[in-house]
Length: 353
Ligand SMILES: [Zn+2]
Image 1 (cartoon, rainbow, N blue to C red):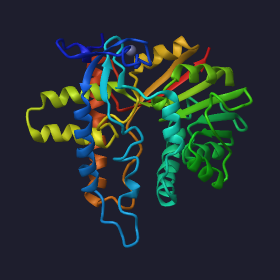
Image 2 (tube, rainbow, N blue to C red):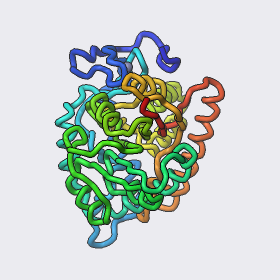
Image 3 (cartoon, rainbow, N blue to C red):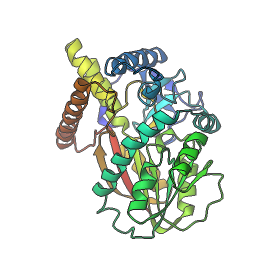
Image 4 (cartoon, rainbow, N blue to C red):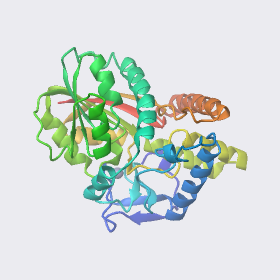
């Protein structure tokens, strides 16, 4: 059992009865981390947190519209959050069916102004991210055919194009697919399990999307079939261990102030109310990849891309930078002490065996 789950006498749920078996290991026991009431309370806290950090909307602006992806997440239905007793993966239960998840994303609506703001942030993020991962991705030369599942506003497709890769995006969102096409990038709208795609990709990228898949095993098998032999799979996922560690710290917090600091750390990495279907740990994800014919070659911890934008109050811009610095420092200290990665986000590279 992972060390952060070692405490006994905690309520558990039968995941099989709720058709929500662990997506990483198939385990059927869930230790309750957040009840449905806790999740709702965290969502209310998060709305207040972000509202206090935004400048008032200018005349004619749709107030609060661009808070999407900050406080109003796609996964906002009533549910609890549990940790798989067997592998430590954090899960939302009950889990919507894969079709329900796809439908939610297909109907997601953002509006032009929000998409532009998201694209600006994502363009900067992916340019820096591909620079940072350049040594691990050196096998991808100019002209390499790469696929991105969940291409969203096109930030990765742009950065990939700048490296001379021939990048194709796939996204279930109709509005985002239209938007990305208008930006001049190649994107197919639909589910990667159903689209007719030509195999032989040198790499497949799934950024901040794998954790929202209701059928990750089927997607991994599909990715393997689409990859050339020895091709790379690059994933970015929220780390379930960060959630369990933060909740443990909150439980032991000696003061309200300390409790608020942990919540703040969670908020700036989008963990408040745990808005993901799955929070793999580095180990549970590595095991899952291995079971589907991949060998994990690189796992690195990270924080989420910058949340601040033009409407963020100056104090909150500084607060975000400070909080993320503290989180990174704490994660390094925890790693030195335990040998485990606690960082809120994980960049994972695996090779098709
Ligand atoms: Zn599990």
